[in-house]
Amino acid sequence: MRHAPPPDLITEYDPRRGVSIATLAYEYPRGYRVPEHSHGSDQLIYAVGGVMEVSVGRSVWLIPPHFALWIPACTTHSIRMPEAVSMRTLYLRRGLATGLPPGCTVFHVAPLLRELIVETVRIRELQGRNRLHGALRDLLLRQLEAASTLPTSVTLPTDPRARAIARTVIGNPAERQSLASMCVGSGASVRTIQRVFRREVNSDFESWRRQVRLMKAVELLVSGHSVKEVSFALGYRQPAAFVEMFRRVLGATPKAWIQALARLKSK
Image (cartoon, rainbow, N blue to C red):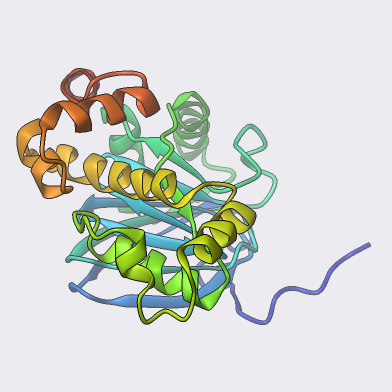
């Protein structure tokens, strides 16, 4: 059974007949927002500079440089630019990337993958019958399938009271204000907000807030900030507490993680 396309479907950038991958390069100013839309093709969005905040339904991702977000076809999403962003986007013909995840996924962009993305954008379109384009396409897909993933997303509650609190935290992850003080004026008690978070995002509020701080930590570390600077920027009084939180989630200390990322970048 065929389903009607969503009303916000945009097809102007999708690969035309005979093209396997189409591309777009765009410079966005600080604060710019791309409203909700979707594409008929699978999409890989990558910023060669700047950080993107991508929203899909109730999920939010922060995508710093050296990472890209895979968005399957017909997935409605919006993009906000907290700072100026140099975006490079690949639109893949549906059915081409059968080895990639069925849901939105953040990939680490290693140097070879970065050059493949940049070269594909330079060419603008990969023609299906061009042997060189076919080799580039196949290598690009294999690199995407082998790329490591990163858990840098959070889910927003639908309850408007809890959602307002969540947006406050995302806007300022370093804020150490207690949930009780944040509930003042929200029209809900701490117990109610905690119950909403457990029901709607499957997490208590403090665990959810730690995930927001992890997202921001990845952004700051990739931007070159020290572990000490990042820990204080996220509201931790002692760097050791931040290091332990980071290690529990990503399996390595911030220093070890960023060193491993640097080694991949230098290959």
